[in-house]
Length: 316
Image (cartoon, rainbow, N blue to C red; front, top):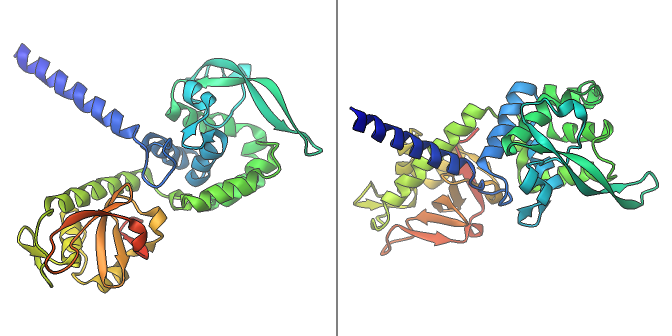
């Protein structure tokens, strides 16, 4: 009995470890430092407090992004938004303390200068995102700002960006334009109004689709083929993979295009279908896809998603 309990505890601990590690992985299609944990925390905060998730993620990229990594403030202190310290924050459950950092500011005349300031130290990235919505944005100048209230009512990240600047979040005169550019570049508007439950369901479906595609590697191309393990054509492969995730789509390429939602290639996530006229493939991430190329070939992995014209998705 004791042995069984110990084994159960070890398995549980390992499962928890791997689940935690998966949450820390970078999310496909976003800067490499934006993790699933961050996106899920932004969606959770959107549900609980109404702040559009697209703008939340854009702020992290704007405030903390430095090429392919985050600033030291974000990396060491988990302060993803450059939020400054106030003594009233000391008792917040998400807060671990404070630290002094140099910061750049823009004066009223447009000139820039550097000064030292106290910033909040957070217990983790998710805690920082929660604090932003639960505490920081509850201050009167934000909570009562008409643009922010409109943004919350309409799930509008553009309006949220305008409201943040209007309420005094940043002194940078180009802050709103920068946030909007980031949201456009990375397709962050897709998160506005999306529930955390739907996001997680989409991830699970994507994993099932990708796993099904891997299971068919080496299967010969057969024109019109729809028999997994024996012979498939390109749309027969995508139809089979989607069926494994409980999603029904027709066999033929153009029908799949009309049945699923079209999105830019830049917004494709693992499990989405890559489309060009007459050909489809399963996107698996990192610019790679699995497809049935043509007669005489077999199901295989290829790279270069930009040879397709768009992506097709069953996600909301």
